[in-house]
Image 1: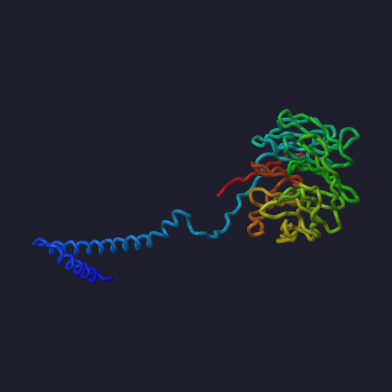
Image 2 (image 1 turned 90 degrees about the vertical axis):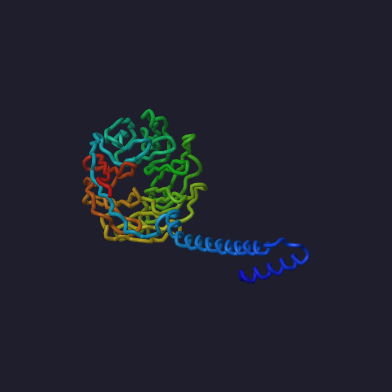
Length: 369
């Protein structure tokens, strides 16, 4: 309704009211002045509101930018910082499998387990474990201890080492011959390769006893990798397969066929070598190969570290980085001894045992951009 119409109706109402009341001289002019002031007030309020709305419309994009940050973009990934050998420690008793945990790097040697300081790469302790072999023993950390497969005289099993005092505290006997070991889902898992169905044992770290019956997997079980709520066990079938174990029930729930091995888990995928060379990336839900990098035809295994897959190639001894976003090689290959088959990841970098020279190599980024 227009202001003139409002004023007219008010005038009519006042005239009716005046008919019944005696107005003082000059009353009506005063009332008109009030009406005009009310009209201007309404117009002023409307103008201010319009100005506020216009200013908000202009400022809204800037306020949203300040609250939510810059608009989403897809910049090109930064080049990976190159790795280099920053330390080299000689292992007098030789060495094979390394593992990281409890603020140290642990390496199996001939009859010993080394404890290495990751900051200085110096050997802090050499723990005598007569039943540890140079290739037959594997090592893992977790559940309050360091665990290594081996034998005590003629008995085969798992050694438990106290990382606080650097000494063996228990030996859990198992059928011959346990090799691969890992710690995950509150259990210690040990793989015993066999010509028939291989088996996986579960050890309860609270009691140092085998928990539940052996779990049958494929022929000649190998690498074991924990990830995505399951344990993935590599089998030695003709074309390769991987068994998926439900850690809660201890049953094999699926077998991934035509996959030679799985040695790492990361970026939502399983990683391993391919039947036709190179490495493959596998969807843990569907079991399908989602990417294959066949140019790495001398790949030995894959380790996941710093958001990327690191492929150890032999010969020559090199480490090659593959970016999960592009499934392509990033940067150049890094020399890593003569045989980087035995490798582990730690916060400080990658640790490689050069079996041919008996050296432990620490590889770390040399620069960041």
